[in-house]
Length: 441
Image (cartoon, rainbow, N blue to C red; front, side, top):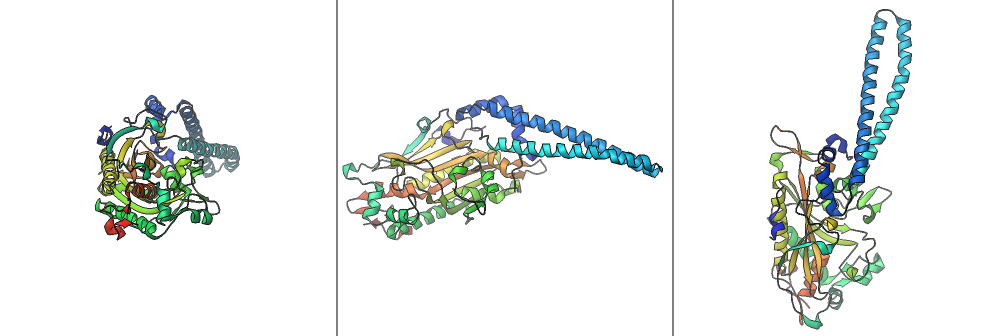
């Protein structure tokens, strides 16, 4: 497995049709347990349960197959008896078949229940971390692989973004509370224009990098949530419309990746590069304290997402390219930033390897995460049943990747704080053609 250069500092889920996950569990169990231990998980009990269910399922399937073979043989025998005029004996044999049919029906129902239990267990199993993922359980164990840009020294006069937003009438937090509740800000005036400018700036840069733009639905069904791994892992963090059984998207990754759910692609189709701007909705249950002040943590926010479908041998080079794409955006916004490689305990449920990019908040004197760029390898593709065929070979699972490019709230927070002056807030030169103004005053 290739270690990316960034690491060096620079319809219904049908697992049992694929069996890839079960093959890994059976054939590579020790390595899988060791890899999952980086997440702080003792995977042995979970793997024992899945494999025991699989053994029971396979045993039941053999019973069903044997009984159906008996049924077929008996049917042929009954046919011969009728042909030879032995009607009474044939009718007796047909009556005896009833018990056999009932036994097959009972076993078929048991088989369905076992498959359902096994699929549910597999849904709870997180992705295997890439070999370069460091061990560790908290964000303090994440590895800083690069830092770039000079932190501004604004002194004691520096104001946090929520005070700047109020002073220059950019964001009305109180109106958002009145309309919806905390975590739903109202952007106004140049604050609204700044949002719109950033969205267009990010989309234009994605377009230049070869990503095709989509405007996807903002509500998805449960199959889409399971396909990309938000369900069941993040069910409590997603807004659910119970009457229609639809979920508000936490990121454009969900609808964009599900565009290819169940598809068989050709090698010539790859890579597929998608991007999309959407609002994102997250319950953020359990969030409190200083980290939720102002724009630091919201229930609704805007984000431009980039998504890729890749051949396995190319996915880690593509991950490097996606990280560099985000770095280029931050350079153009003239924001100091750093790149982190997440440790096992901080790694998302679906990711094999994730790089977080954080910008420096000059007034809050701390780093703010603005992007996560991840390679999921085949984890999502296995759930999505998204494959490609290379020539005449057997279909293979694609690798999927995604990244924030970028999420707006903390970018806006950093722009306001880092670029504040005595005369107002300076707009970076690369953004001025989009805002139509060079200063907020």
